[in-house]
Amino acid sequence: MGRLLSVNVGLPHDVSWQGRTVHTGIWKAPVEGPRMVRRLNIEGDGQGDLNGHGGERRAVLVYQTDSYRYWQNQLGRNDFVYGQFGENFTVDGLPDAQVCVGDRYRIGSALFEVTQPRVTCYRLGIRMNKPEMAALLVKHGRPGFYFRVLEEGEVEAGDEITQVASGPERISVSEIDALLYMPGRSRDQLERALRIPALSVGWRKSFETLLAEDERKGDHKGAVTTGSAGFNAASSGTAPAWRGFRPLRVSRKVRESGNVTSLLLEPVDGQPIATALPGQFIVLRLEPASAPPLMRSYSLSGEPRASTYRVSVKREAHGAVSGYVDDNLRVGDVVQASAARGSFTLRPGDTPVVLLSAGIGVTPVLAMLHALAAEASTRDIWWLYGARNGREHPFAEEARGLLKALPHHHRHIYYSSPNPEDRPNVDFDAAGRLNTQALQELNLPSYGDFYICGPSTFMSDLTAGLAALGVARNQIHTEMFGAGPSNTPGIAASPLPSPHVPAGPAGSGPLVTFARTGLNVRWQPTFHSLLELAEACDVPVRWACRTGVCYTCETGLVAGKISYAPDPVDTPADGNLLICCAQPQGDVVIDL
Image 1 (spheres, rainbow, N blue to C red):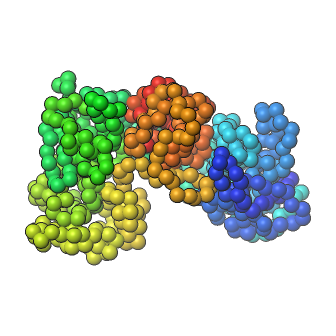
Image 2 (cartoon, helix red, strand yellow):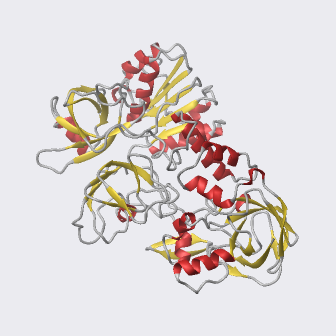
Image 3 (cartoon, one colour):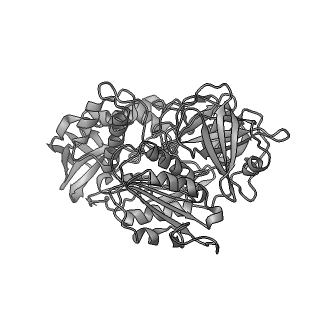
């Protein structure tokens, strides 16, 4: 069937890369003699990033000499050594197109089971000195695969590889890899893949996400939507109703509390605007007469309708945009607005709905409450809100009125520093903060859907508290104001400064606007991608492969056009882009 040509191991270590420190175990070297294979590792081996590699179902990475020869020809290189691709086993035979997930093999005295293809990873590009290598493995259908260790034992170079069982459904490693990353997948293929017990947890969740997105769109006949829809927040929302910006007029300006003002916006041309989903946001571009344009993202706070949008802005101590809205914007003024976008939206169904917010984080969940009241929902509705005091409690009367329309509602308001005039059990229900301890005192339905919006510490605290109470992670939905958290696998952690223009001479290319961060930067060709520009500005970003494969970096493209180099393996969702391989073609606005 095949033969084990080399056993390769290596412990993680730090390497320097693009001015940063990467902790990685991608460097493997051959060892002589027998080696013990344990449940998680080969003796003497280790992985640097256990989120993407390692663990029980990714204990041993396998790559084939046939693929070695293929890449030598493709890349014009002759410097490969065993372990070059970060694999533990270099084998003769076992091609990706024939080995199936669930197949079992005896090597030496150990028994193995195939669980998934290799995870696309930028660190292979570092090892190969070819940044696009992760994408090339997918595009050329030669990923390699992982073994799970069913029976521990010794292995040694020269051992024969004997297949002892075949996996159900007979889906090859190459087919599974293409099913996740390439266009043209079908619902039937995804359902077949999910019937394979050996399939690793991560890939199973990805396929379940793709099926769920297909179910949400109601299309069960043809191919599932191309792109990796649903893999992250950016990719799982509906496509925006229009590209770029549209002029909207301020029809009303309402003081909601001591520090919050609402703007009601209507289309200048009188034509309807698309009805937003409850919980979505828009990007506003404000154009002061004697200053550069100002741009920010704001959740829609009113009842979803096709005639007006309502946004509510909190006055910040040194906020240029909130100060302009408060002091300068007048009824009748025109602002530029993006279409509604975002995936923090109310899910349909009959499960309980728990809406948790603090401060100005109330706005998207208030839109959800409006939607529930408009349909006179009979669902069990919980309204939990935290503020400093009554003066800083916007929409208090509005929320009370909406809750009265809901027959099964529960209200708990928390003031951390109530004023003397604030009435207990009328204006608020408890003195203190809405936090994990407060959640423990409530009899919340653990099987409900939980929607959380507020400061980052508030959301992380409540998310952890709900998980501790037994709420499943997929039932907890969060929305972040401002830039979201970074995801930079393997990079040594260090404090990030506030976003800023990049060091060095200013660029002269297209204007790149990071909408959530409020930063405007000129593009310069020294950067290979918008991801590199964002990193130079210390704008928080999320990425993994850096070559247009994994979709971790998928982000909203609010306005403008981009090009790709290299081309991603599949197109992102409409209205989005992959920042890891995108360059601007003119001025662009990005939801970062």
